[in-house]
Length: 87
Image 1 (cartoon, rainbow, N blue to C red):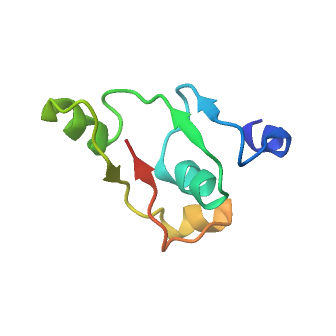
Image 2 (image 1 turned 90 degrees about the vertical axis):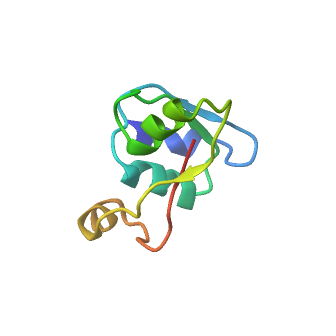
């Protein structure tokens, strides 16, 4: 449903707000490579970068997710050379 709704967004003017349920770095990489601006709420126990941020005590932290697997890249039609920002 997410991918069907994206045609309605203005990539330069809209901010996509995602609630929980988007697991994995492939959808994040897909949105990043597609030029979408987005904010995503994630489980505190999900990604290692979130755990690192919570333990850091910092008010904010910019980290990078691992590149998606080749299989995920094929599924989402994305480049595995691009890493996706997390945080």
